[in-house]
Image (cartoon, rainbow, N blue to C red; front, side, top):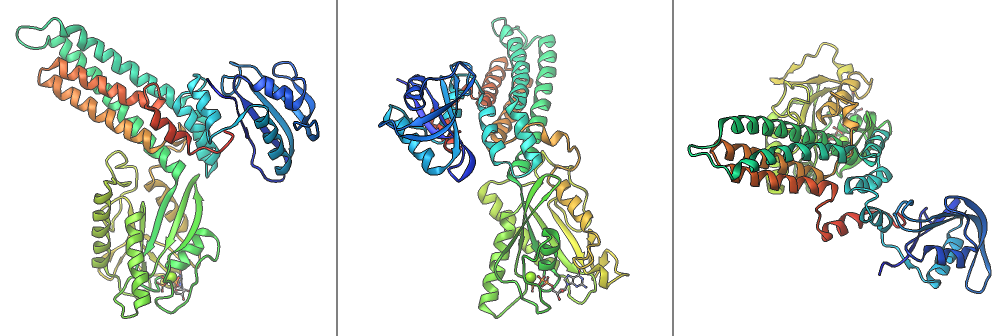
Length: 477
Ligand SMILES: Nc1nc2c(ncn2[C@@H]2O[C@H](COP(=O)(O)OP(=O)(O)OP(=O)(O)O)[C@@H](O)[C@H]2O)c(=O)[nH]1
Ligand SMILES: [Mg+2]
């Protein structure tokens, strides 16, 4: 039998209003015992919350939402009292004493999903909205909550179904000499459309994921080129120590900024060089590791030419990073679904690395061809020159620069990206199988593609996966 659950729906901190929420078959009976007679459905009434002995605990508004017209689809009763953690704890105790059990994190939203109020992508959007780190990410989550991703999934499902129907209708009528050319051509056309549609959704989901999860950027280069100064300039804060002594930075220093709605974590690292100092050597090892963990790298040089550049060192760091990524099977930002979204770079191959000359203020005549190396950009951490170009590159390299309105179409998660990648590759398989003349195998691949797709909205999702998803929610949501 479904139990009635209770939880605080607002944080248990001193605040203007504290909400306690009940949901389940006994919500009204328990609500009436703790708060007194319930108001009419969807009306508010002023009531006193009382404990088992009838002692007053708090005064506030009670709302009554009989199912299915409620957030969870079940009977829901809410008490909006004062945001007093001690009073809220006693009210929850009183509800438990009257028969409710404490809700697990995300249980209200899980119940909403199970009663068909939300699909899984909408339920996830609730958590994404709550945890959004920028306004743009919040708008994307709100769009998902309105069903944007669910509708895109449905449209692709419908296309895949048409394709399957076309193939399966012909399964029972095998042509003597291969697939009917008309069916073949039409199915190939439909599949090409599904593949393109799937690829677009995948690229969009990756962009949405960046928006939600943010980007990590490492500042790398020889000592004293101004990495810490650039971090401070980008973060607009004196986060890192700056000095003219080479080897100042040892530990990683973190700065946070939001560019065009994209949260970015910037990691300042120890300057890379040969050293006998064991502490500095540890710092340098950390710099190299940082390179393996980030989405983007800024390789910094000195425009005055006083500090020699060492591209062999950068190449070495990038090779180490590629190996670390291969171990994690991480495709990184420069993978094919984002290719072309970042600006072309002169300095190095790879859309996720940029070579930047700093101290432009001290070298007014420096060129982007300096010391035998080619550079992409000239900046000055001191005067601010070129920093807007650098910010623009960061946003573009994240694949969020070209179509800002598009990046907020829905909110994306790794789970969605993986499902869509599987859909795209299964549709490619279906195309190949049809090309080889096997209607049956082709139809089967399309069926598997549909099963993958339906995981996004949760119409075919295993219980353990659901448990994993909802456990990341807050209590009371
Ligand atoms: N003229 C000029 N000097 C700069 C600029 N950026 C940094 N500097 C100077 O360069 C020196 C080194 O700066 P840092 O930011 O500490 O350099 P770093 O790359 O972090 O050095 P390490 O931590 O030792 O690897 C300091 O004296 C800064 O004031 C700039 O844009 N223009
Ligand atoms: Mg430094």
